[in-house]
Image 1: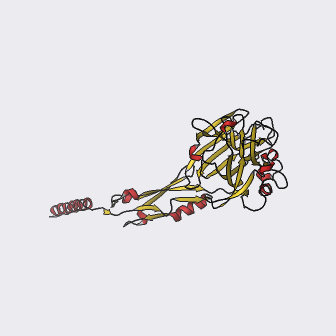
Image 2 (image 1 turned 90 degrees about the vertical axis):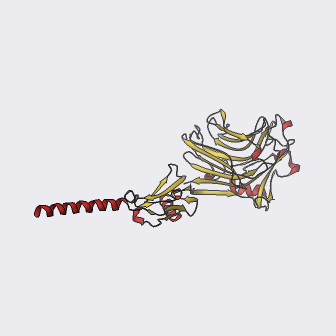
Length: 367
């Protein structure tokens, strides 16, 4: 009797195990939609702590019928900190217990833009009141003369920089005039003409670029429809080093050039040889307000970034960046910016009288 009883018990155990295995195999996973979304597609951030806090408040997780403890979440940030990707999934131990009928919403990407912390920033904005030259001087070189206008040989025209209200920007802007005849280069050079504003050695120190300093220059400008360029040179902006044997050659220059078709060029010179870093057809840049952001780190191992956008819709029309470029010359004391128009008169038949509009200049040292 004892022998038979033992066999029955063993058989009972086996039947029980077989029954449990069959029961386990027949469990139907729970169907539930888990997801992650973002309340905003873009985050502006200042430091790592600020970024993580903003990500936490921006990302929205839905666990469906699952418990939060059964879920794993992950956030990946690109090396240049411009994108953050968030994902959600079941932990390995629970992946057989659930199915997700819509896995397409299990990840989301958010644009990241680091806010620049500016120090010693200045702005020059047209106000439409009083003396335009006095306004420019009060910001760029108080008590001195940061204006290189062709007034000396064309005094009857009056000041070659004035202000006008612009309906597109809904604000006052600076208007730079240049005339093919009568205007020259300060009654010094007669094969060229210029109408520019600048910083220079009489300007406040925070308006001069120095070695190992990072600076952002911003401004808006508009070239008229049908703008005509010289086949030699027509410059709209320069960054020039002062001091040393290479100061006569600008480091960076915005140049427009007559051709087939006419071009807009970003020119650069490490020494006394200038090259074109990037160029584009000029037509899309005409008859529209353009917003420029130029960021440079001054040094023998410097950086440079340029973005030109349409003010109306933010479309990027021109850009260039270089993370390792020589931005300092031997013997240089500082670097100064210039804005306006400076063009050759060698082929004056290709030119016409022009009116260029500029607005909202700013210079900011970056912390």
